[in-house]
Image (cartoon, rainbow, N blue to C red; front, side, top):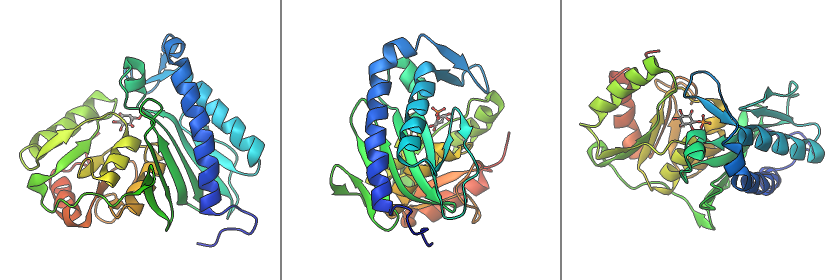
Length: 273
Ligand code: LIP
């Protein structure tokens, strides 16, 4: 993948992403008490957006526009900016991933910011404003947390796998996802539901869980975390050779990926509403 001359390298894009994400994280943390008094709903009555989700996204978009006016931005709250030219950079932003946790004051939410060129994510950061946990990756440059290179879990069997997952906001979809998890519970060590896909992917990258899967994610939920997991040596994709996307995102070390993938196909995890 050729980066257009004049377009920054993955390392420079990462430096920009980290600097802007840290400022955004500070805003999310500082304004929480007030922000959770202004809450609307989106796709369902449990799919919430706070004033901070919107304010943080506006802050990041403004900072990127000031520094790199030619770049595009796809954000969860305000959508896609102008069409991005071939070879140009598009930033993919989830201003607060784990908004329900943010609303309840649970310390599991993150600013997730990735840089993509011609559909390929080349740099990404996931930053938890409460814990300060900061996961970063560049394409070919590895995945890192606090100066430690991440290499994923060494687990080799599904029955010993600590598996993270998540559920959508639609009740019919949750019923299908619940049925899949009920069966998976008999086949894995245990399930963890932390509530933020970006963090789930990074926890899998560092081996704090062994693997992760979820149906119904948007690009902003998994762009940065997906690169962190891939650069940590995990396989990250959909099912049956499909790329990671709204039908399914699975992230697992090579030893576990096959058995987990096959179980998800057998249980029609990418199916349902
Ligand atoms: C959340 C995801 C999570 C999923 C939630 C929700 P949000 O994103 O990170 O994995 O289970 O349903 O989609 O809405 O907090 O940005």
